[in-house]
Image (cartoon, rainbow, N blue to C red):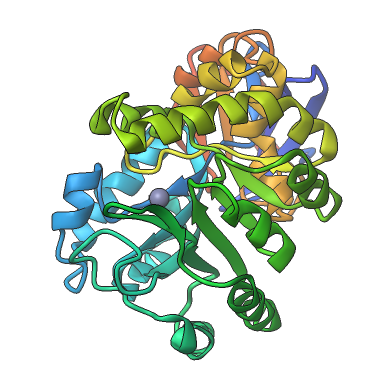
Length: 375
Ligand SMILES: [Zn+2]
């Protein structure tokens, strides 16, 4: 049975696509045609900084990552799908065991790109988080990750607060550049966690692909990152959540608030410069609720249309993935009202198609043509 669907994209353009199994095809002259142009279509929401290992930070720290609980991760992956999130970048965990999620059926999870174990030196990340890769070992460890695992991303913790001193860089710029060269040589991308000053500039110069949080990116970093179409995932909601956890007048809380002020100052310029600004849950927002970042992006100076793009098409563009064309995964998330006019719409999908199967069947799914010649 051939099915053809008619979609209306958030820019108003219409598209007709056939569905054969898990993929889109050219529209078919036979079979059923379904008109969904009363709804607004995006290729899927994108969570560009999530962690399938856990649902919140205490959970992340307490979980035994050596014995990855695949059932729990599957549940989180399903929660992502139920929120209309059809592409996710997992930005790492304590070990590589989470990479098992890449082996489960794509229909049961979002499209996934994953980092395995996170790279940080001793003292350069949460205590008891067993990821101690000191600078002399970084290149060897990154090479091992590229040759022995399925991880498509290398996740490095760029800075971390030291008691009584404040945040310090974890690695030199030279070490970062070395790690990037190795990862790129194996076709992998590199992401860096940074919440403090100085390290964003080092990371941009070192060629890191995606800046996570990046609260202290400078205007010249933005220009350089935009020129090479780099990514930036500010995770505003997650940063606000951490300020609440630490207390707004604690030293960490004050630093992050200052950083968020900087984010508000550079976010519109980042879009103009061509940076792929993306959104992420980062275990502060629950799995499937990345759309809560939308109103924050508007509050920080973007239009509803820009925020909608960040939460949807921009993630696919950043990763070079085709969407809503023949040969691409038969995925779409639908909304009753155009999120380009009101980004909060992204929190209320009314139709979700993943790998050719309706996970949420839209109301008023209207068959406009059925041909019996297909039987
Ligand atoms: Zn994270």
